[in-house]
Length: 343
Image (cartoon, rainbow, N blue to C red; front, top):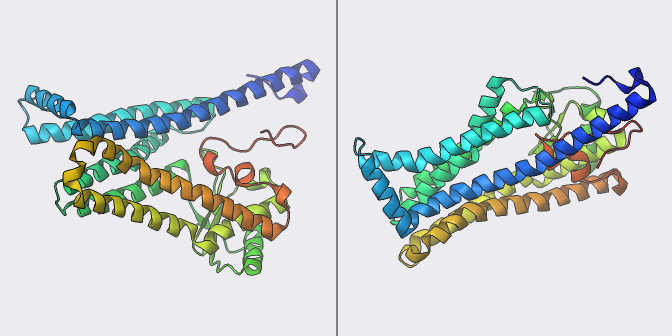
């Protein structure tokens, strides 16, 4: 194990620096692969659903069901439709989280890995399969599809919240301290109705992020290691921008409206959609997800603008540079010996 450079002299420092740089490149490379893996998994689940609506796919499933003669045909089809993607995705997620622990030096236990795998599989994989069941009902013009969509929404929200908890997001409300004072001072300046301020322990996953919801903001307790006071004001201002504009609520409502619109179209136009159902299945999965992330990007830039306006210092950075919005789990900000942030 390499010692700290101060214990090894010039040669030791160079060796340590090379090791640290190589480690960071490996981490960043894995982060990029990790994002692509998530996209591939989503596409695979969508393709699995579409496969059932292809004529050849349906015929293959029927033949496979006949081979499982010891099972009721309806049960056999349910096990295939649900079991194959859930088990497959869960195995991939478990491998990915195990590699996260190795490449990104996370201090997760085996129980942590299982919890992360479970909730990452529930949201979105199980939620997507519930969504698919709802749309299959709409294709047949059965209103029970509404029940499936409601269950899918509940499962998606529960899975997301439990995943955040597994990642280490445990809100601890504070009633005093520098963060509390700065947050309420800045909230008063921006006329944001702030009621609660939370600190989130970084935890074994080295979580580094900030969050904004209606009347609430939260910041992980390790931000002070990475930012100056002025930069932290920018982060607080960014989150106050989310809270004031109710971005989280708008994002959920718009995404729900998109799903409802697609559901209505599938119900009304089901006879005309029959030849195109596999393609429509894929659109049902990706259009709401793309809508959600498009809104996320738009709201992030809007919150950046709010932070810049509040601090009057655009050089303090953006959400990409300071908040690490898309690197919540995988990449904490890193600084070199001079205090300059690595890009």
